[in-house]
Image (cartoon, rainbow, N blue to C red; front, side):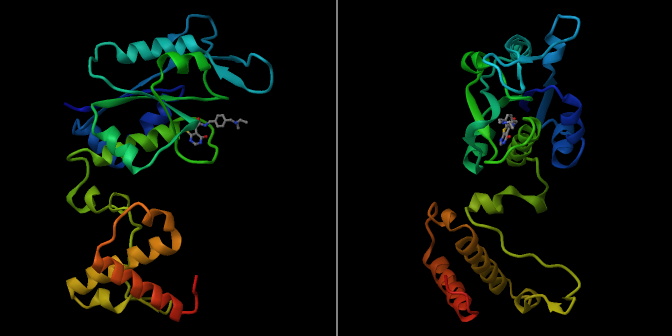
Length: 253
Ligand code: 9D3
């Protein structure tokens, strides 16, 4: 069965347009995922199709009304008996990371709620939302981009969604390490050569160099990630070499 995603949004065209490209378009075509947008505006009954209103208590900014969202949510859940969590993308949510995406991909699907304006009426969250997720400590103008990021990140993990050369297995975050540097032709660009080992044809030496770069970059740029993983004796040796070489280059930490 396809992984089923329902997305509540005031901007279904934005979402559907993005999904016409890349991994999502292929996953939709091959029915690895099903994606349906629901516009709360279609679940209003007043002349102006009102989806937002002023904030009780005053202050700037509008709040998304509970009823249109509630009805859109019921429509999304109607006729699908599979248990799927309702996720509200919000700056107040749990930070999304690889583990969260992996657990989402292990389920049957998601119901995503993308907010606009200052957010949605708290009572709707209390009654109908299972989890709130944030993509990071910075502000964007609505939940659509965050929702699309979740959709794409989950889809890449589903069986068959990626081609053979783009396998998610060796991805930086599934290994818990940052990626190594990449190079392509020409061999010399603006006076800078590609690291010699990559032209050597020695696959073992290349794999060791790449692992060393991954470890070294993680150590220097994201030391927090090293706390989450157990390094093998070989990896510890490579990292020690990287650190020794970094010191020789005159940048002890
Ligand atoms: C600028 C308005 N802010 C209060 C002074 C609150 C605010 C409301 C609504 C900030 C952002 C948003 C819209 N953001 C999202 O819907 C959102 C989001 C984000 O902004 N950052 C990180 N993750 C997410 S998930 C959804």
